[in-house]
Image (cartoon, rainbow, N blue to C red; front, top):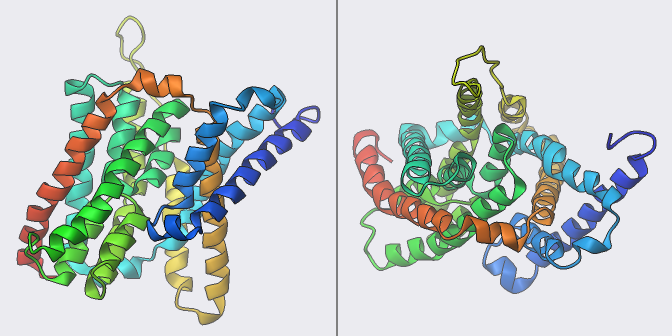
Length: 351
């Protein structure tokens, strides 16, 4: 047991080891050039974690490994719960039916498209396909992290999915504002904000793509994006039920009773968002909520760093080019399909 009397010292050493890498990742994210690119500490954490995994991994005691695993599993669930303090129900109400509808349609279609293409066309294993789909459809690396424990996927598969999010989310972050300023995206700033929030991968990338236009574009982009983030909870609950059902066939192909596996951390995520909805307007509590978000960023970065520490280059080679091709198709769907869906929805509900 990782926290038994005999092992707790080593497990805590492993957790502290991950925490030190996390501090470095956060500091690096504040460096001028990197900060200007809106690269989150989560991404930097997984990169330096992978650097360690493929260079220095053999130089630490193997007894520390349970601490690294704890950081990538249990700490991750707690961090996802705290992520609820970044969202309020008021934000969803502010953006109205148009934002909510665009978020719902793009999340659902992208997730289903990614899962189907990954398994049926690219012949990827279910976990890799679903992790790539969740990263593109919901909120990037955080969604991949949240989906991993539901699937009980191997760490390297999450790392592969995160890599695709980083690649195409970064491309979108620069491409969307450029196309808008060039007049190719024929929409006003408020509609552009809904479009960005409903289709760009990471929260930080949405902030950058919306902020490049400013005003209503920036505000709507963030609000719609956070609406998408909140949808990770029902998605994970539904996914948990599907995964439970799909695992009830035994070797002989006979059906047996299945136990629904509800990802309770997703339920608590909604609860925290509800609590935050009541507390966010209390001025005296703003420092507390800010502190919670800072702690959450640290824990999420720890989880990403630990994930990287469990990922070797050989595993990436095994995955090959197929996850990248899958993510490319989803990125094209998000940009092109999302554009026309946003225009259609806004014409019905208004911006």
